[in-house]
Image 1 (spheres, one colour):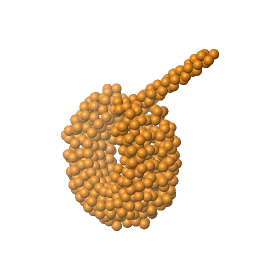
Image 2 (cartoon, rainbow, N blue to C red):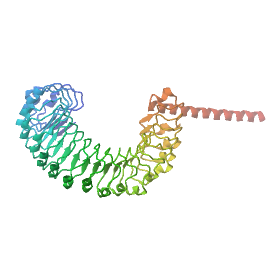
Image 3 (cartoon, rainbow, N blue to C red):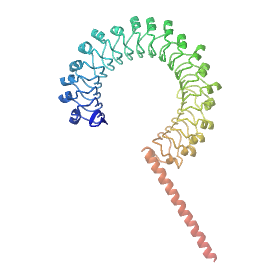
Length: 510
C-alpha cells in the first residue's frame, strides 16, 4: 500500500510480502516518512537505508535481523523504530543509540539479557520503551536519564524486584510488569503522580504499598494472579479507577473500597473465593464488564441486577441453580456466561434478555440439561449459542427462525436427529455436532450457504457415511446434493412408469 501526494510518496506498506531484502525501489523513495517492513524474511539492512533521510517511522519487526548496519544510525529524523522479534546480537544495538531523535523504541522478544547503557544515556527523547518478552532481571542505573519516558513495557521478563529507577521517572503514565517474579512494590511508587496504568498481573505480590494512593490519576490496575488477601484502605481515594483486575487472588470478598470506585467499567474477580457480594456492590452502576466466574456462588447475586449498563457478565463455574426474574433489568446485556453451574432445567429467565448476542451454557462441570425450550427463539439478536456437554436429545425447532444465529455448538450431547427447520438458519457459519448419536442429516442442510464449519466426528453416522463426513463440509454438501438429485430422478422415473402403466391399461380396455 502506498500513500502519496502528487509525485511524492510518504507512506509505504511492504509487510507480509516474504521479502528477503529491502527492495531498492523503496530505498530510492527519499520523501518517505513511514515504512512498514514487518513480518518478512529480511536478514540484513542495506547501507542505502541512509538515503531515507526523512523517514520518521520504521517497522522492521518479525524479520531475521541479527546485526544492524551503522548507516541505520544516520536516520536523524527517525522517531519510531520497531525491531521486535529479531535475533539481534546485543552489540548491534549500539547503533540505535546514535538515533537521537527516537521517541518510541520497541525491542520485544529479542532475547535481551540487559539493556545497553548507551541507549539509556544518549536517547533523551524516548517516550515509549518496549522490552517485553526478554531475559531482563534489572535495568541499568542510567535509565534515570529517560526523563521524558511515559510508557515502559517489561512484561514477561525475570524481574524479582520492582526496578527502583522507575520511581524517579516522574512522567511515567504506563508501567507493564506482568508475568515477572515480583514479590513487592516499593512505597516510592507514590512519586509517580502521573501514573495512569499499572500492570503487575502474574507475579508473587503479597501486599500493595499504601503510597499507591498518591497516584491519583490511576485508572487501570491489574493485580490478577498474585497472592493478595486484601487491598489497603488508603487506596479508596483512587476515584478515577475504570478497570480493575483481581483474578486469582485469595480475597474471599470483594474489597469494600472497590465498591466506592463508582467509575469502574471493567471488573475482573474470577477465582477469588467469593461466596457472595457486598450490598454496596450495587453502587457500581457504570460497570460494563463483570467476571465472577470460578467462584463459590450458590445463587445469582441480586446486586448484579442493579447494574443496568452491564454488557458482559461471566458467571461460569459456580454453583448457581436458578436465575432471578429481575435479570430482565439487564437490558444492555450482550454476552452471558453460565457454563459449569447447577441448572437442572434451562433457565427461562434468559429469554427476557432481548439484547443478548452470545450465550454460554455448556455444562462440562455442572448439572446436565436435557432440553432447550422452544422459547429460545425469542432471542432474535442471538449470534452464538454454546450448549455443549449436556444431555440434549433434540434441539428446538425455533433455532431455524433465529435470523442472526451464526455459531451453534452442540458437541458432546445425545442428539439423535436435527430438526429440518435448522436448514432455514441462513446466518449459520459454524455447526458443531461431534460426539452425539446422529445417524443422518436433514436432506436440505446444504442450503446453509454461509456455513463454513460442520463437524460430525464421533457420531454413528450412516447417511452420509464415514468416508464422506470425515472429508469435511464440502464433501458432505456434495453428497447431500447428489442424493437429492438421485431422489428427484427416481421420482420422475417412477412417475413416468406409473403413467405408462395407466396408458397400457387404457389400451387394453379399449
